[in-house]
Structure formats: structure tokens, C-alpha cells
Image (cartoon, rainbow, N blue to C red; front, side, top):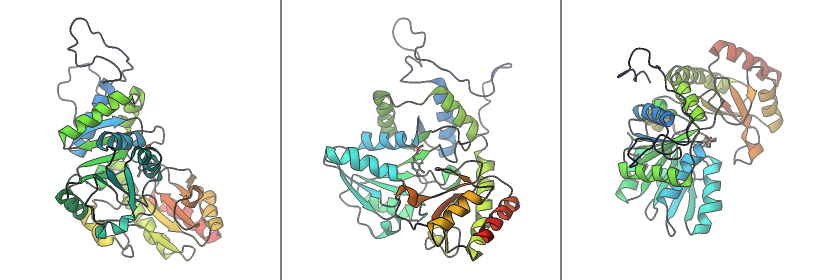
Length: 357
Ligand SMILES: *Cc1c(COP(=O)(O)O)cnc(C)c1O
């Protein structure tokens, strides 16, 4: 994110401009870089260039994480294909596949993330990995799964939303393509919905870009600019959030008010060894289980430094009880998204709330 002043003339803007455009000046033969607003936009290009540096791979941006996910499923799958999705991953991905792809003769199978190591991948066209899974934070060995998929000629996709390119690098672990909801940590300011797809496979990226162009699922210039600005502080925000989460997870695990803590960085996590091998950071999400829904709601609603919202990855600490959406988790399970508050200030507020439960 610190690249980008090459080629500037004195007086030039140092950041990207917001360019709202449906048309560009296009006399004669259509040879200009920018021709029509659904095909290209300079503000998207500026962001794609930054994300390409961060991901070390070609990147195409989308108006949401789900749009990025749809671009892959729709551009890569055909009738007769089979796709494997994590049964404990982001609900929207499964809902999209089951509601819209299954009726088009695309077989949708599911598997819990922690069982990916035992799963036979042969026969699938595409295997979807989400690690750690949202919301349960289970872990699978990405390199092992990607290696077996490659041998079976299966395309691997990783949803890397929870860790960002600074916390885990799925393409370096052998995955073909990744998606990310930039709505979460990447933008980080809880003010826009956004997503991207990255891959080192140029042919696949051309198909994804073409799908965006033909479907018309394109981001706004202002939203692309917001994400660009958010990304510039991703490293400091993510570093603070992950460091704080390590401290908070340990202390929550020691609290008598808490039944269970799920965090890939804790020695008690069943995927800890794999997490240590493949993650650069353990992330800022913590799964906290209380004895019942009432206690969980009191923790979320009574702690002055916790915002009760759905979604995660913002500067402010937030939390929600996932069973309220029907996720397959305990009624008292809370997904806690640790923000950028000073660690002791945050813990003091949490501890007081825990004591009052
Ligand atoms: C939020 C999320 C998505 C969907 O992203 P949107 O930006 O809300 O469309 C996909 N995958 C994961 C893991 C998510 O957390």
C-alpha cells in the first residue's frame, strides 16, 4: 500500500480520483483504454492495482463479497458439474449455490471444514475452502487440500475474508483463486459493502472480468475509493486487532462466565498446529460460548465497548449471537469481532460485563 507515487508530476493528486463515468470521449475507432462505464473505470483500476500488489495476483473488484463469489460460481461451473462447499462456512455462499445453481443441474455437496482432510475430492469441478470457517472458526490444512485437488484436476477456491492477505496467503499455499469480502477488515470502516477475486491464472481472471462486464455487477467509483482509503491502514488496524484478540481470547478462556472459547491461536483449538503452519496471524474473530442465549445477549448488549451488529472486521469491537440467523452453533455462541480499541480499555469493559452476568 506504500507503492504508487511513481510517474507523478508536481501538482498531481497523490491518491486516486473518484471518477463517476458512464461514457468516455471516444471518437473514431474504439481504441481508448476506457470506452464505456460498465467495462472499465479508473477508480476501480487504481484499487485493483493496489489489491494486486497485496495479493501478489491479478485482481478484479466487485460491489460485494457475494458478487465476487457469484462471479466465480457462474463463470466456472456448467450443468453436470459438482461443487463442494463447507457446510459450516458463510451461509450466503451455500444459499446462492443451493437456490440458483442446483436447479441448473449443478450438484452442490457440503462437508464440515474440519473434515476436509478426510474428504475425497475426485469428481468435483470446484472445491470451496473457507478457513477459518465463519462463524465456527474451524480449520483445515489448505496446502494439503489444494495439493490433492490439483492432482484430481479440481479447481480450488479459498474465501479468505476472515484473515485478509495479511493474515493468510491461500495462493501461496497452492489454491487456484481466492475471494474476499472487503466489507469486513479490508475496508474496515463499516461504511461500504465490497469484494474482490484474485488469481495467478490469467485465463480464469479473464473469465471473471468478462462475467462482471456481461452481468453488469459492477462497483461504484465512490465505493472503490472508500475501500482504497480503508486499505491504506489495513496493516496497522489488522496488527492491532490480531494482537488484541490473542490477549482477549486467552482471558476469556480463563473467565468462569464463559463455557468455551474458539480461537485458532489458543492451544485448546483442535486446528492449532495447522493454523500455526499456514496463518501469518490468527485473526481478530473469537468464538465465545455462554451457557445460554440470555447470557450471550447480556454480554453483547451490556458491554459499552461492544456494538451489537451483524458483520465483523470494523474498527469498533462488535459481536452477535449467530444462532439468531439459524447457524448450526450453540444458542449461547457469540462471534466476537475484536476492534482497534486499546487492549486494556477493552478488557476492563468486558471483564466488568462478564462479572455482572
Ligand atoms: C461477509 C462474508 C461474505 C459476503 O460478503 P458481502 O460483502 O457481505 O457480500 C462472504 N464470505 C465471508 C466469509 C463473509 O464473512
